[in-house]
Length: 113
Image (cartoon, rainbow, N blue to C red; front, side, top):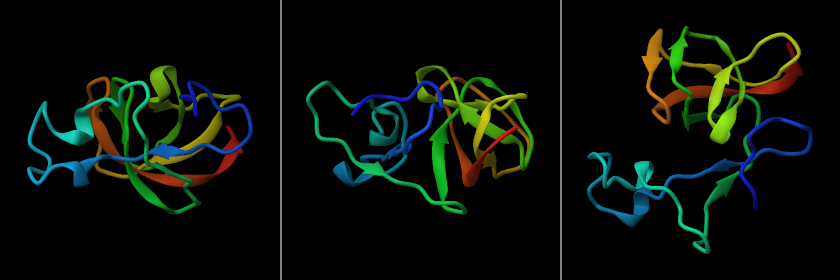
């Protein structure tokens, strides 16, 4: 499995959290949601369908509810622009996110903007 840094056809998977590794839940820098997988570790991947909702890592930026998103650098979701394939919509109140911050998104039925 490789990390997508752009949408180029095929199926995209969402790399799942490892929250079940810990009884602490979302609690900071040691939270499994915020801890990267290491080379050789077994991953948890989900094949999303339209209308599925996920917490996904975002590129730094300001997002509005319903904003169209695409896959950007480091596999983080970012604002889709003309010509991009829309993979999801931002699904929470307007927010400015830091790089890698998790946010609610709803998977789209992929289309080109």
